[in-house]
Structure formats: structure tokens, C-alpha cells
Image (tube, rainbow, N blue to C red; front, side, top):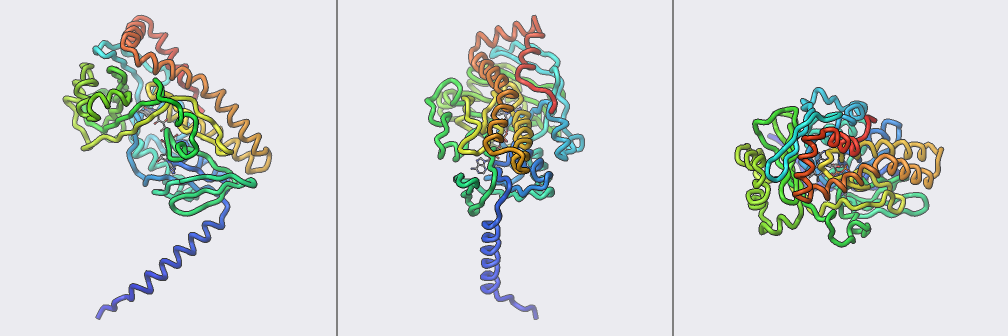
Length: 402
Ligand SMILES: Cc1cc2nc3c(=O)[nH]c(=O)nc-3n(C[C@H](O)[C@H](O)[C@H](O)COP(=O)(O)OP(=O)(O)OC[C@H]3O[C@@H](n4cnc5c(N)ncnc54)[C@H](O)[C@@H]3O)c2cc1C
């Protein structure tokens, strides 16, 4: 006869073991703690752990998961991703070589992209990176939100929903807007609502008859919607618009799409004929393109947490990964003891500004321009007549392979 296991002692034992493990974790001082496991955080974790340091990463969601992003990555990141161990060719990414832009009336121009890019879902890419990080030895706490970070006597203490941790260096790669931004009252959070800080983003995965190598950016009143291919015969349909547009549509996304987006004939055709692969889209709100601080109480900010380029530039992901590379260079020098904390912060800020400040500024100008219907129409006319102007603009918002 089968023996019935005494459940209560077993439960008690498991509880003791888990308390013991937590206590052990509390006693470890990590070299680097990373808050937020998007592209910036995951890429940084892999680079640092490969140099032999103890790295812990906190991510409030559980991989794999969908997030709002147009999922077009500039080719400048190709070599870097491969160097992290991502075998891009085996992931069925799509090669994107052409750009089409249309104004609200559907008038458009098309041209070759100077460098080009590829399409892959964040669901897949972030998951692959998280697996590589785990295999390399990064301790990843998923479904764990960091609630606060304190710096004192050369060490950080990190309060998370999964216990408290200590670390020598902390980076904030917690994206566009997080509970920590609100807690720390970062300037872009307390800023009054303006033209650059109250956007919403919406994303779907769809099936649709559309060229594999094309990314299209279709304008509508106070917004634009991109479409391009990702892996597995799916397309990413993602748009950015003002919170006002949604409020004026009774906070009803479908109504906004019908009344505002579909005024552009290209979008009407896409929304009318595509197969939506999800019941509901993924959405985010309160997106801000205002300037952000690069270091907050000795926490180095990377990716969108340091500053967000407007999505129409299609370069936020590459910037997030490139920032992880310059952060890793400085953090490693600090951990090796060759530079002080002050120098690490100073070098990081100076490299960041040199690489990204101009791109962000051009992105903000373009965003304002695309907010105006007549200026967008003018741009499209200019783009048709003088393709070199568009190429120059694209180059000003992109970097070189790193
Ligand atoms: C509408 C739209 C379209 C876009 N399209 C493109 C595009 O086509 N190409 C492109 O290159 N870029 C695009 N971008 C920009 C791109 O998505 C971002 O630049 C990029 O995701 C930044 O990566 P990140 O690692 O900084 O942040 P994220 O990828 O946002 O990662 C941040 C992570 O931190 C986690 N987190 C937050 N707070 C906490 C906390 N307290 N504790 C633990 N975890 C936390 C979040 O869950 C999240 O996983 C687009 C952006 C928008 C809004």
C-alpha cells in the first residue's frame, strides 16, 4: 500500500530551507545589481558576469512577455548582439531595407534605408538574452520589483519584493517610467504636462500581406503607426499618440483607431484586413521624451531610464544596448579598482552625452515636426524630391556599429 507523506513536517522543512536561502542571499554583497531586465539591463548583466563578477538582476515581470515596442532594430546592434551570444540568424529575424512614410492623407514616399535593420519580437529577444544571462551565472529574480535603493558607506542596499540585497554598483535600467522614478521624484516625473511628455503607446502582433523588407510609418492626427515584420510570419503594428487623442475618444482604443488612425487610407486598409493575433493590445501611458538625469544618488541610469529617443527614429533599442556597453566599460574599471566611483560616473556621463545627446535632440525636433500635419506633408514632399534630406535625418538619429 502506498505511504501517505506527512505533509505538515515537509512544509515546515521547506519553509526553513527557503528562509535559510534568503538569509544567505542577504549576506552576499553583489558586485553589480541591475534594476530592470529589458535590453539595457540584460546586455549589461552578460558583459559584467563574463568578466567574473557577481551580478544580480531584478525584473518585475516574468520572461517571456510582450512589451510596447516597434521591434525594428537598427543593424548597428547586429555584431553586439552576436557578441553577447545571440545567434540572430537562427532566430528567423527579418531583414528590413526600405522605409515608407505616409502623411495623414496617405501621400507617401519610399526609399532605401542607409544602414537598414532587422525585425524580432521583444518577447523572443529578451527571453533569449535572459537565458544567456542565466547560463552565464547572472542571478535573475523575475516577478520581483525593486521598491527602493539607498547608498551609504560605499555600498547600496536594495529593497525588493523578494527581500533586501547589497551591492557595490547599481544601475537603473527600468525603462521609460517606473515606480522608482516616481519615488525619487525625478524631474521628468514632476514636470508639467507638455508636448513631449504625455504620450501613449499601443502594440499588436498581426498577420498581414506586407513586404518582408519594408518598414512603414503612417501618420495620423497627433501620432504615427509603424508596421514591419518580426519572426514567424508575424508583423508588429505599433503606434504612438497623445493621451489627448485617447481621452477625446472616450478612452476607447478601438474608437480612436477607427476615427483617428483610419483617416489615413493605409492604416484603414491594415486595420480592416489584418488578422489580429491577440484579443487586446499591449499598452503603456505617460511616455516622456523630456531630458533625464544620467546618475541619481550614484545609481547609473542606462537605456530609456537615462533618456528616451522618440520611436519614429527606430533607434531606442540600439541606444539602450550601446549605453550598456559604455556603462560596462566604466563599471569594470571601477570594480577592478583602476578608477574611483566619482570617475566612473563622470566618464559614463561624458561618453553618454557624446554618443547620444545630439540624437535625442534631433529626435525631439522630429517628434514636434510630426505633430504638425502640414509639416509632415511638407516633409513627405521634400522626401520625394530630395531623398538625401531624409537620409541625412536618419543618419543624425543613428550611430555606427559598436
Ligand atoms: C511606441 C514605441 C515604439 C518603439 N519602437 C521602437 C523600434 O521600432 N525600434 C527601437 O529601436 N526602439 C523602439 N522603441 C524604443 C524601445 O522600446 C526602448 O528604447 C527600449 O525598449 C529601451 O530598453 P530598456 O532596456 O531601457 O527598457 P525596457 O525594455 O523598457 O526595460 C525596462 C524593464 O524594467 C522593468 N522594471 C521597471 N521598473 C522596475 C522595478 N522597479 N523593479 C524591477 N524591474 C523593473 C520593466 O518591467 C522592464 O522589463 C519604441 C518605443 C515605443 C514607446
